[in-house]
Length: 259
Image (cartoon, rainbow, N blue to C red; front, side, top):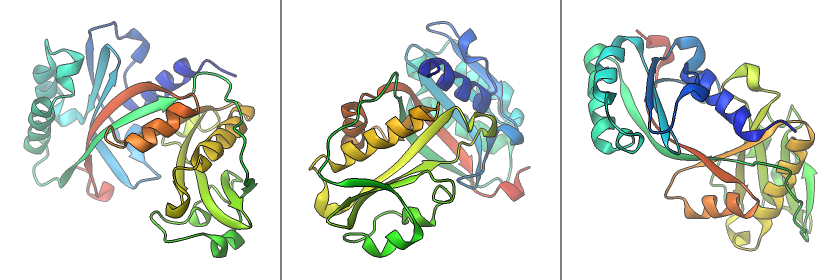
């Protein structure tokens, strides 16, 4: 299996347009994003500002029109200061000034985990199976997220369900990487556990099974969530995931109107 941190750093480097490995501790790097790198095929928007905090170093990728002003704002700031509300608001203002008429929205904070080594399977009373369209009728309880069987991961054989007494109580998909050239090297999960079955270890068992399967296919596994989602963070950590980076973003919701 490839070195997880190196692979995830490369993943971020391509999306940011920055050589992440060249950023030294305490440094902040700023670069211009471009439409090709930041076309988020799975989410349908263009990232115009993306801040990533890698422990004690940070990177900012921004639309070229606002590059000079954002670079000035970032000058002599620490990585922690770069994640602050103050910098985020000032950088967003610079974007709005550089792109008059653009409809911007904040994508908020996220924390990104990766699995550093070989995951261990976790025993479960349920049965983990590859999902098919027929599984939709077996879902237990109300839906919170769109059903996994509607996701392209089903066609790719990368959607799995945890069944208990032939009820689908948890499901997980592999998101399509936004960096196409990394599709065979990284895998990011999307997981849901039916409300009545949470807190019983089912999500942990399913995430471990998915992680083992993706690693067997030679891919490094990524899990991302909001910093306030304690349950999601605890789930990832219980399977052996470690924090890799924290991010903030400003996005443009209509790629067709990209200036």
